[in-house]
Length: 118
Length: 108
Image (cartoon, rainbow over all chains, first blue to last red; front, side):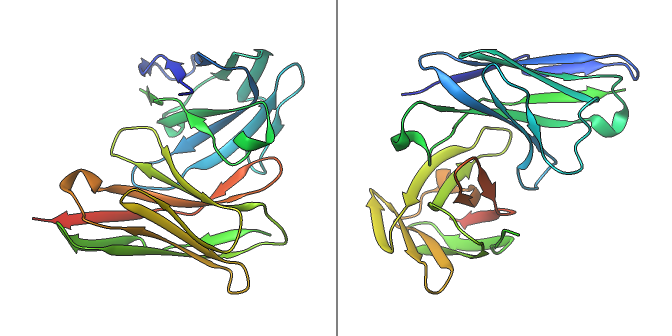
């Protein structure tokens, strides 16, 4: 099956620093990757959608300059949380969608990254 | 806009059957999908309904009624490992919009 990896799984950083999270599709080419944020016991909040080679589309209320997304290849997308603050502490999950209409309804999720900003 | 409603929590007994409902509002969508997420883990795909009716996958079934803007996930022969959160999602041309999730508690 389709596998998506995320790195790191956990990261602790100091307030004011930047953190980069990588999302990779391991055995398929991901035309579209999605970044979600999830607070404890809450829903998946879509932050942005990225298509390979083009700028990410951010959801309303998500700061583009704070959450930088790059989708440089069909297997890699990165999320950089710039100048992180404690309120940015959360569980960040990426997902990917591959080629073809059959995969339109199915997204493959990465294992998530737990970010803690101190 | 698009929105989904599902119960925040449901409790059932091991071995029993449980139904998790999902109602939605949308101006257009391709179908309704369901995902399972265990604590600390990633969501995993369970089922998808593009058409009205029932889709069965082992112990899990999902139903969609477009005329009623309603769907449900049915879990049979509940096992303790089914304790998790379940999300319904509206599949559109460019993304999936998720409900807030239903936390399923299973009693022995």
